[in-house]
Image (cartoon, rainbow, N blue to C red; front, side):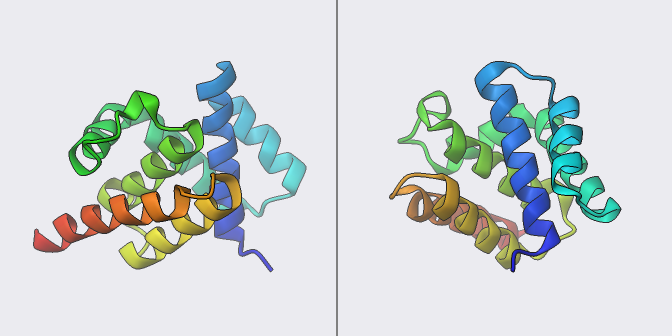
Amino acid sequence: MTGVRRKARIIALQALYEFDCAGHDPASSTSRLIRERLLPEDAASFAHELVNGVLDSKEELDAQIRRFAPSFPVEQLSMVDRTILRMAIYEMMIGGKVPVKVTINEAVELAKTFGNENSSKFINGVLGSVSAMILER
């Protein structure tokens, strides 16, 4: 059974994807997806935090993606991979409420479910580099 935090991450991923792809209002999309999935209040709050945090920190998050995946221009990444990386880097560097290993594992699982056949390895590699930098601090 999928945990409520993973469901919150899935909702955040979908809302951010809708925004990236179709320009839908992220707050409205997040609220709609939460209602459709009957997410508990604490998980709903987490989903909103992820969406807002990623949008508020997008420039900084993209700079980290450029730093740790220099061969892959952010603009050319698949929308799913880019969104998963933004969410995970936000959780690791800014959100700070979830252990780094858990964040990486959750991002890899999202990539396996929603990305292409190479997404999970790519995401794991980039986030492994990010986590090494965080541990050096």
